[in-house]
Image (cartoon, rainbow, N blue to C red; front, top):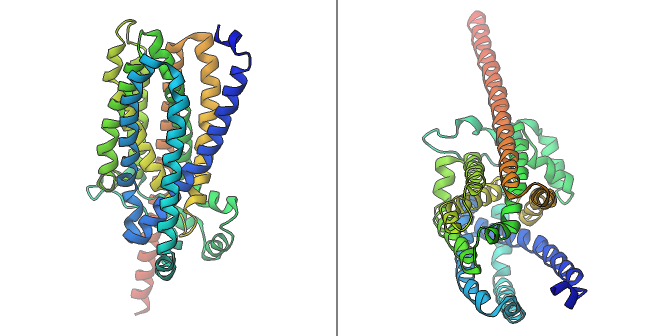
Amino acid sequence: EEQSKHPNAFALHFMARIIYSVSTAIMFPILDGITLSYLKHHQHINGSSRYGQERLFGAVSWAIASIVIGPILDIFGFEVFFYTAPIGSIFCFISLAKYAIDSLSVEGLLTESSGVESEMIEVNKYEHGGNGTSESCDHIDDVVRKGLHDDEKEEVEENIDHSLAILKLLMGSYAACGFLICGFTLNMGTSIVENLIFLFFETLGGSNFICGLTVVVTVVFEIPIFHFAPKLLDFFGTENLQVIASLAYVIRAVGYTFVPKEHVSLVLLFEPLHGITYACSKTSAVEFAARITPTGYEASCQGLLSLILGIGSVIGLSLGGWVEETFGPNILYRSYAGVVGTGLILFLGACALDKRKADEYEKVDKQGSVGLDANEGLSS
């Protein structure tokens, strides 16, 4: 009926979605890069681990907007967005103007400190939990360093503006490649949750208020994870946070398929798992890239990582729409739980390969040391 009243509605909506997607694809990596650059300048070498504490303010704003907009949509309809969108744009421009003014005022200070930060160009080693909880994958950066000789490091630093040079850093080991594959499949899974889940809730009898409430429950669990991100990174390690995120998604996606109709409120039991998935995956992905990013190229590296993960989202959502329309939502969410689980298994397998390779290196080093000591004894 709406399509007959407005024959160009779908085309206009499609165009608006493209503009929105392009804008966010450009904006979010830049925001992450700006945040990381700021944290590195003010927190020095461990600054990137505090990214989550900055990101939690976005989660709080998201929760407030969701709980407010739900009842408004139920009462006034979606036309209310014609008024709220311009208001949101005004706030964005105000924030941008304030950031630009503040940045210009401290530009000289940052320039003076850039020489101190130049030491961060080298590939840094991941810091894992002191209690040994991430032994299976605690050597990704060691392998990255072993895979890049000094002359290759210089080449990467000199040509870092080239995407292939950054990609070489991101794929420096089996475990690093496994991390990207796991993130790729996880983004395939989260794409259907973030874009199609409300349609599923509507089939269960959910209202706009319930949909907004699910977002609030999600964010309530995101906030503490973002706040304690530095401690979680130290305790679990970057890779284990990705494992936790993937496991939470699998449990949540399968759980949705057991919610009966007219009992949509039961989905609230699974929403905390989305908060865990998003916060842990976002924290681990940003830290994964930040640890190997030369100073000054934070946005470029985050942008390339976002591109890789974004391709997963596009593929996941494209296939997801067809699967839901053809086979129904239960098959959709169970099959995507399998996709994410497969990516997780490949990641763990890659970690095992790297651990085996590291053990072999260590064994050879020990044998070489023993042989050297024996030769010294004989010569003496």
